[in-house]
Length: 302
Ligand SMILES: [Zn+2]
Image (cartoon, rainbow, N blue to C red; front, top):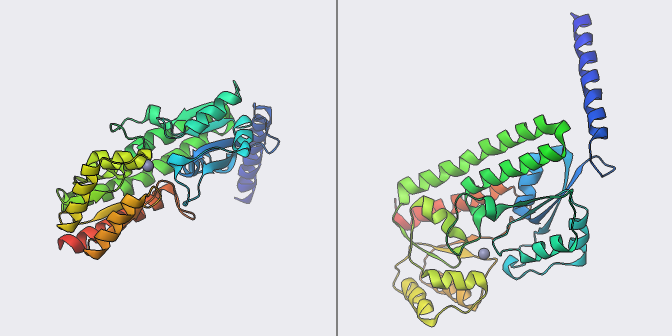
């Protein structure tokens, strides 16, 4: 029995040795043997970490909750990181034009690029926030795994296993969306910015805020005056049950909507563009959905 175990251990050691050899002979440029991944936004960085596991070094450019990603401009350090990366993940769709500039400034044939917006199956008009759809994220994670396997074939099995685990964990988000839909479809809600449309749609919520206002806020423009008046009236007259407030992309207009909602006792659910510290993509999204569900429960008495 013991001899058999020792035999298995020896076999394991040999196969591990084989893996190390394969690893060393692969095209990994870094001495650490890990692939350098740069994500434009931290939610993509987190997905890359989950899929890449111990084989990747991930750095994310946008992770400060006090920075509005729509207004971001890149630094010299960002440029250096991109120049030495083997994989760069960007959103695209006009969201992070600065990353496109950094990539153009340091051409590298050995670097792979994943552009989430371009591969996302669910795209809403004038709305680049594709990561708010778990269905999109599933496709984006799969594309990241494909690149990692191509760049580092020796660890393909690990990437496949990590991807499977990640995909499985997204089911909790899909379930929560269905649960909210089954209980609260048709409930009138307000949105200060377009980001949450990727979830209000599948949840069946009835978004009352004029789309022109949400879009102007996302793009950093002044919304048409009549749309602001409509949004203000909806709150004053209690026509929405909850205000979903993008606290990372705010302006004096959204702050006023927030204050008015507070004074009318309309509950507010804060959401963010990027992932808050200490969370994963899944826990961030699930926490927001849970808050929304709680608030819908109390404001609709369902
Ligand atoms: Zn936004």
